[in-house]
Length: 172
Image 1 (tube, rainbow, N blue to C red):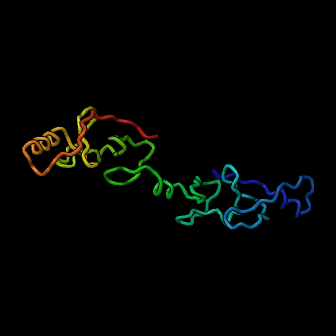
Image 2: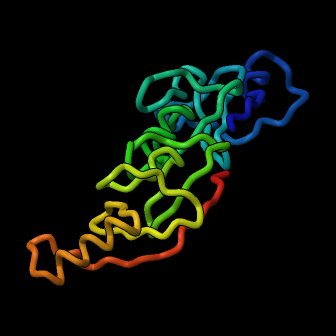
Image 3: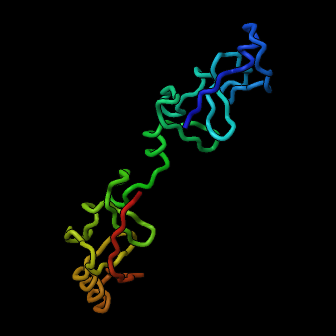
């Protein structure tokens, strides 16, 4: 969130001495002292010239009308922050909306539509048993086929397959 503060030193320069002069505001963006009438503050204590507060990716100006995110000293608009740092679907690599239902398997998160067996493309539903092999989802039937091939000496060894019940959760 961006706060707009009235720069009291600006008022002092304009001849209004009714307010005490506070500390000197320095712009995080350019390093210069802020003499503008308004100072943009990004919580908790980062102050900017209005012309310096921009998204590090797309250079969109950031102000009180849009959400501002700070990471590693850089500011981002909401869209770029979500694209760069948000959780992405393990299958399609797209982001999630706050209203999306998701499926989880170990550390992976999937859109409901993307949660499919990687062999037969069967849509896996809550309650279905599945396995995860090398970050590939397998339905119970295809997991069983891989185990059969492995026991018959096939080169398609299932490796470290864990079968677990499916859980559904909502991001938010």
